[in-house]
Length: 253
Image (cartoon, rainbow, N blue to C red; front, side):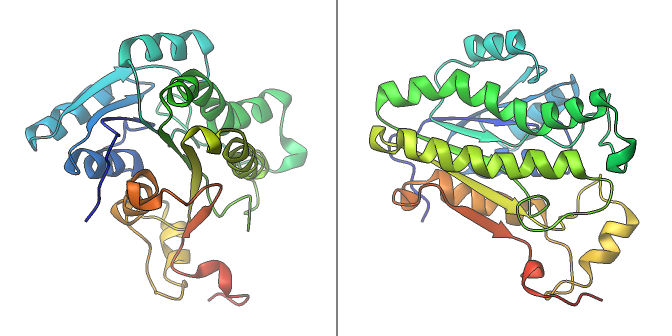
């Protein structure tokens, strides 16, 4: 049984997509009895909140561009105190889809955008909410990393890989800084996960995993739920890979 003890309110970033990891995570946390705030860069996050409330969950939505410190400060003011922060925002947005471009063809602005969307968002959000957790002596930060970057990579994903590897480094550093304050910081590293953004090529690659299929957003959300719970009280600075064992095999396909 998942228990949350002192935790009452969670914030999940990057929860605008109807079939993504963010909304699945919000649903899992809300289903466990938490009050959940979801945020994304477009107004579609309001529709996600309506859908979750229709399921009987305590959810509200706030629109914010998490690459802008002013927006994140406003988010902190509107959301109030948060016990669990899930840094799920990353990869791309509706306005700016994920960029795939060979490194030698990347402009400086391409690089900045890749780092901003997938790493700076976590930096700004965590900086805004972590102090309150430390002050109260309790909290959970769960960073959505990826196997891409820390363990493997793909052509055309240099900036994304660097950002997600940086997410792991941020997780390790923060775990050391705030552990004695009752706050744990961990990461989840998904592999091939079937969402509305998955390409046919990605779904084909997922069929070559040891389990022969892509994972689901709900399976990633289950990992987040554990790391956010009291059961993970002695788990700190860890990276939980959710990829069906794909990084274990040298030969794929």
